[in-house]
Image 1: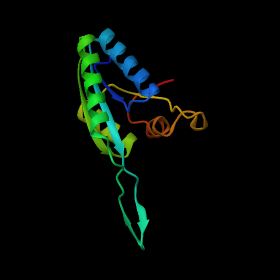
Image 2 (image 1 turned 135 degrees about the vertical axis):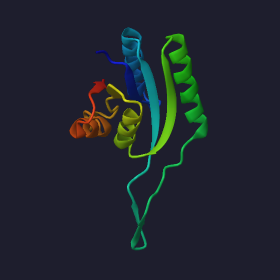
Image 3 (image 1 turned 120 degrees about the vertical axis):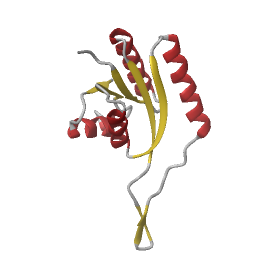
Length: 138
């Protein structure tokens, strides 16, 4: 039983490019597919005059398109099946939802680029939840 379906979080950062490259390499070796996902983080809520309202971050459609083109081109060059999706919400949860939808065998994420965060918030949340095997790429 191999790794047939891989979900990888990507946001255009260096660690996420390394995670994507690792996911593609595994998919080539295992003849699997890669489901790349960019999640636009939406903070839980912000206090506004005594009540709470969700505050979404503005996404840059141009950078989303560049990321989608990059993923599609790399998958094509490696002859790997896969897709790219954009989601809004809490990053770790959205990656898990996609992994459930795609019946993923593995979630691949990059380590935080910020040294003070060490492992990073998203990898830590995924590891803590323990719902899927996780590969954290430095």
